Length: 130
Image (cartoon, rainbow, N blue to C red):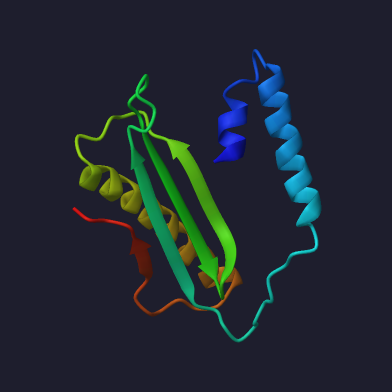
């Protein structure tokens, strides 16, 4: 989210934006040795999906976010501002879930040729109260 906020001001950066960029870079430098242990026996494909409905009052666009992992290692993700406006929080969540499901469909076809077989039902965790 921090990088998304900073990139909105690329055309006319102010000192506050440069301070935010410096904080992001300091964080990345401080956490560069963090890592994720990979278990080659764990090849489960799992997805996470979320949406933010009209957070920015001036634009009212829905933000879609998903993350797909294999063995708890991120392999595909997206953070996208949709071109449409969701009429409810539940609709925004379904839009995000649909976007994640499209990527899962493609990734499963890709893994047939290059990765572990994914014959089991796909699990996508969704934050949805609707």
